Image 1: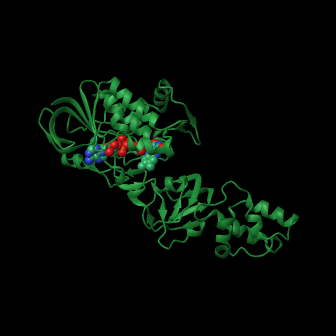
Image 2: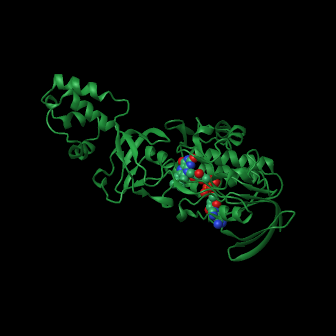
Image 3: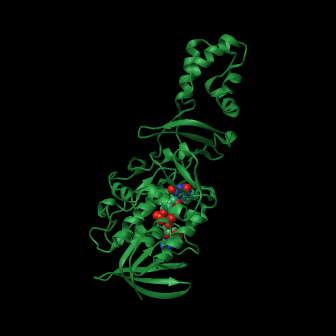
Length: 389
Ligand code: FDA
């Protein structure tokens, strides 16, 4: 069987690419349903883009690589598409756009766009072998126990990264890229919770508060969530993309709060109030209990000198912890790193040394922040390859 284009992976990027491809297109996926990550994303409501999306929100060895695709298919283009399908949406926070209803609406939109473009979709299909034929590519596919030989002029690697193997992530795109001589940069789990082997935050599980979380490379003002395994929440997921094993991270537990002035004022008006009682007005009470022995939070407000209050505020503004590790690919929302962008055209996503071979989406070394940026990369890179084909 001959197709003009075969797309490996019916995820966000692969389906988007198929919607824009000319000619006869086949999309294959080993899963039983397309767009499974879209379906479970955003708590079932799919954070499908971010109105503030720009190249600065993406990590890559080459931070310039994403610019062209993001500029040629922007968040506004995808919002217009969502609007054309009458899908209601809302901004949750920080420019993050979610469906009012279900993420399945986004999967349905992509399937409808693929159908409009005449693309075929084979599910429960695996690629056994891929070969270069000189004029294109030959693939041995297995679909529900039956073998098929397919040839095509264009082959698009859209099989995503390694995150969440339980959901079908395999690293197939990296393997085929290597087969064609492309470099794959170091891959790491990203947008992932931190773990602590001593279980020190177990008793705080469920406590959440706004923080500023920083290291030498990045800083995020978002929520922190304590879990029975360690630390999570948007602030932690964001910083995990910039963290390396063994490094400490720094929390400001009172960002933007003039706590020193508040404590001095309260010492004046309510000196007999316990220090911990006043702190529990500004921080979760369970966190204050946890910090009591660590920071020596004893006595009444009247017992605290200015120097002591200043020391306490400084400690809350720079609480340093060193995670033992991360939860890894088991729960990571994305994979950092991937197919080296040096090998690709930033305009078309085509492999410079292998005409007709393309790589898009999470498989490529472009990783977005938390908040709809990763889907925007899938839409933009899928569009770039699809329109070039
Ligand atoms: P994606 O992983 O979507 O698709 C790859 C496809 O290839 C899959 O369908 C897979 O089955 C198939 N495949 C893999 N190996 C194969 C093989 N060997 N043979 C055949 N097929 C194979 N992002 C965001 O912007 N907003 C959000 O709300 C969320 N939420 C979110 C929640 C959770 C729990 C996760 C895990 C991730 C997110 N993300 C997100 C990230 C987002 O899902 C991700 O960046 C995109 O899905 C990447 O799209 P791709 O099409 O590149 O890969």
